[in-house]
Image (tube, each protein chain N blue to C red):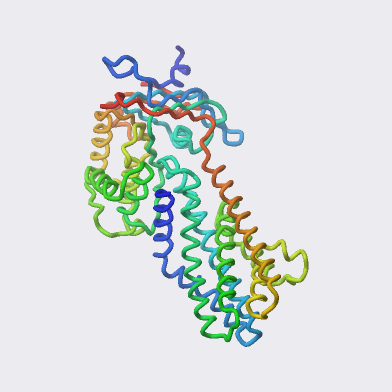
Length: 235
Length: 225
């Protein structure tokens, strides 16, 4: 785990030093939140959460594609592919959850909520789905531009599709609406259970799929055979 | 052995006085095509510990492709690569985390080989010192000059004390002094018993290497000195 931790630390440092990028990404949820601030409370929070998803998945997309050039070299140097993937994912989750915490504070201070911790849960689940989503898109496309277009399409659909339609459940962030309804409209725990089940299932599925892609990309090649050097072979 | 046949093989004898230790790198029958164009055809290279091999050839003859195949970064269409020991690889273009400082790179790459932070930093700084570069400054990689980024790129390939080092034109952007330092560095590695493979087209250094693989005629073969 020490190796995965150091990857997480270095990826986090690399991302957190991009201050202008982080500032712009942090403003996305705020812009969405303010755009619906005068509507129903639930809508404003749902939009802020989708803005958070957009920010975190964009960070994941760019981080994932940037890592493609250095990760094969790190793999050759002695890292395992799961250590590289887990480290990058942990860095993204850490940054995303920090951002979620900040927005939870803003929302709780700004709104009169009966279930404030459920809003926190909604934002946290959003981050846990969005981080591997961005990494998965980054792992599936050759360049940032293609990934950005896919991300815009996905998040755009998330905004536009009626969440009541069964087809909307296919979208990765459908849980956001269920958890938001539970948190704001004081509905029964069925919304909480459905939202959590959907969010966890997508988080696990996206994480597993990205891990498989990383393992394939960084696999030991079939033409290679590597044997350890005997101790006496070098002076 | 015909001229063309000879060109495909580059193998220097094993180190004198040793009872034929196994080679550190043995690439056999490497073939690679990009679409319809054959880049490498039946290329062979054997390098023992304590040897330096140079891979030379005109632009587009597959030097970098061959090194990537040896490093396991890409697969050949045919052929095998056997490696004995640990490997360090220096790509032609620096692959760095642009917002990290040199010391942080040393820690990241040192951890790959199981080294702690302090030993990794010390090792990186010591290797950098041999290239007349002091990496102690807290400058992020993106603010380093092109030549200094390349030095960082090179140092990272040697962190962890690898047994085989694969270098793909690692001196681009070096001034003359750094270039001289680089070759001295390479020959010091050789004297330490490591195997080194350098992609180069600086032919003036070839008289000091043990093996030359010329890929100029790789579509039909590769040359041996």
